[in-house]
Image 1 (cartoon, rainbow, N blue to C red):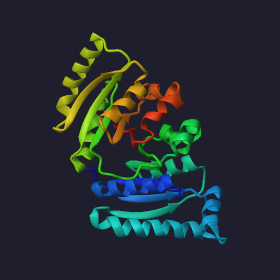
Image 2 (cartoon, rainbow, N blue to C red):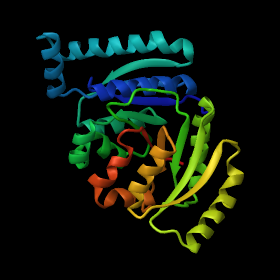
Image 3 (cartoon, rainbow, N blue to C red):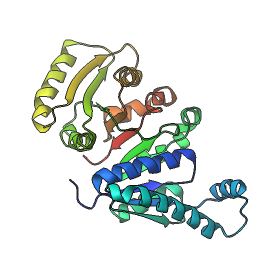
Image 4 (tube, one colour):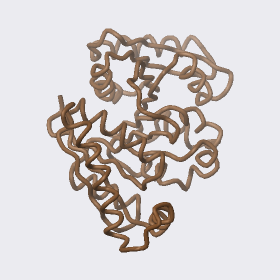
Length: 280
């Protein structure tokens, strides 16, 4: 197990960020991690909160009390189950850059962040904080949709495009899956199935199998007439996958998938957590 595992969970007190805290805390229990609940103050967030609570005082002290309350709840529920620690941090600056700077400073292993609702996410994906952070980050990112609450993952679906780095990235998936005795489906989706696809898939399986010492791993080659993103959506739903995992390196299938017709293809993971591995 990774020693001194550190998780950063940015919060803005929205529903999706609170869901992300739950995921971060539950994962932290398994990794015996230090959890950092991180907030970048904004006037918009403050006004939203103060209007709900009828508060009119100092912004910093108000936000600090909110964070302290979250930390106290997580500490009470999760320390006895394996979470090493939970502390809050407040830093001013540009939201995404400040989060990434802090995560890099403490040498975080994972950023767990909430995403917006389906409609807003589809329409405004390019401008969302979560998408910008995902693109800029050198640290693994786990995105949690707003309407998704934590449940024990029974199946991880790892989307592969046959890269050498998969051998290392899949080790992280195996570790997390082993915490829950989950299944792993390693899936490649193609728009057409040719003899070349079959040969490449067979070669990949032979090449990577020795690196996966986990019995509950299945290798899948699927073909769909539509784009790979929609095919993956279909597989994720029909196979009852709980978490979608992908490796994001330059010019990989993942980057190509998100580069074209974004709003249409993004829909496939909106109702499932997405784990983007940045450091194989």
